Image (cartoon, rainbow, N blue to C red; front, side):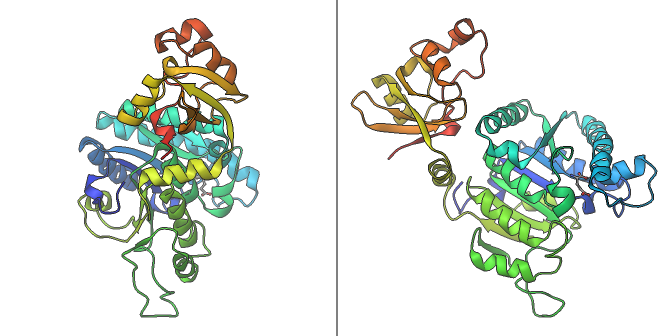
Length: 375
Ligand code: GLU
């Protein structure tokens, strides 16, 4: 999205809420707090916005369910508590969202899932489908297999990766502070809130490192870094206090709360950088004139019917270039089918994919969201 676009016009939101804002001091879920978050999110949804919630709270709920009086130190016990508590967490959300006529979906992810191309595409299409269905995905780290949040308090990075995945317009990182301060208020009483800055500005990391709680779990530093990551998909990050009443509605109404970190380039440029910078080209798809025209003209997805030849060895999720009959590169993108499958379906209408392969992953060979035109 363009820098000038106001938050009220943002359609797709990722909202990250940490344990501190959902639990009674780490002991069980705070039901009143959850009621309030659900009401706020349902309100955004009913105003036509899409919302993905990244929520912690599983460990705290697990500890309560087990009757433990304090948080254990052993990682495996924390992981077990998370597995138990996750049940309570999703129950709490599902039953409350139901009152608003909304379904929820549990999505447990790891950073590794999202750096693996094939899993990235799978996670992406699941989340997109959930949003299309009007469901609220409830995302948490998969604590059984990774422990970044348990050890580092870092669901901020996961939230930024989710924002990249769905190309969210806005990422809201809720915290117990007002936002990013330009100094440590404990040693510098004149430290001020930074209302707005460019995500990725190196000066922000310095400020975050000195701001209170920086060394704590899920500190400001991880938030500032998460904002830089989110900016890669053109996502604006808002760091705001979860203690502000109706914080989500107020942000959605363009009230200036907390810190707004905007990407320096628009979504398309950011996506292009991401595609250009992160992956190696594995193959080539030769297009017919018709396909070149619709890609360039209408910004459409690439369908198998418009492809005349497949070159290279690639798997689902690999980066391939799309070449015009004259040989010039038209676009590049992440392909939905491997080289073998692609060869079988090219030149054919998408309605025949199932008959030709025995299954259908996607009707497009490359979805337009995973495709960038080469200038
Ligand atoms: N992902 C975990 C949770 O949802 C980690 C939070 C923690 O370590 O307390 O509870």
